[in-house]
Length: 253
Image 1 (cartoon, rainbow, N blue to C red):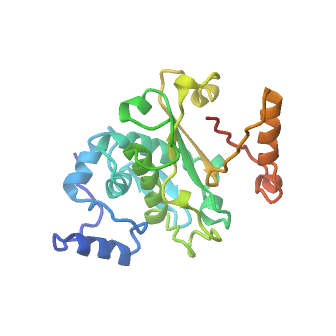
Image 2: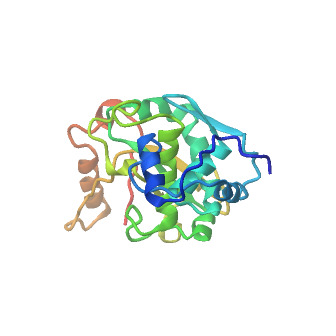
Image 3: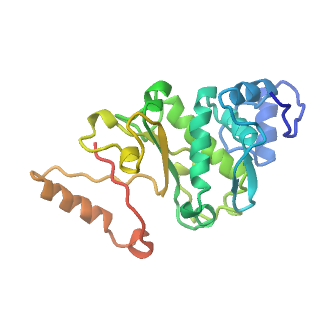
């Protein structure tokens, strides 16, 4: 493996010293990080065939180069296992697509964040949660892959609150936002199949989403009843999509 090229800093082997350094330098999301030692980063890089200096995309607003090595470093910091790295790479590649309009998403006053949706066999291989509480805590792959994305946006892109990230009030989804689709209980084609992939392929979809909005229906008895409630919730006054358009994600459960 080629030698690591990122700056290396030697500090005392002390948990509080590490956390303080990362907070002072703006390299943290405010939660404790896992120190990205060379050994940990190299173990993470072993999970991909891509060279460490390969640039996946450039992250605005600073247009930092999101190399595979930088993704591995932030993945370690977030608590990812090495086998999560391919998902993170795919997600970062997706947000770099011009159609995603990452610059606007990073700098907007809207409290949105890249939501990562994982499909295919890799969901089960990584043990991702696609059922009860999928948008919540307690599942390492969901939590750490989503957190790694946020750290990349902060550390590579420079989207710090009030500086590169102008979200008026922020949102808890800016800490971590990653789920897997429950394909086994889905009566329709999975999302990635609808988008042109085979069922046996693993895929990642990203969209700029607000935190989940709950839709509660205890009275609907027909499909039309349920859709009426859903449509009413989606079309509320003040919703961003009422002015800017775009797709709306509906998660049924």
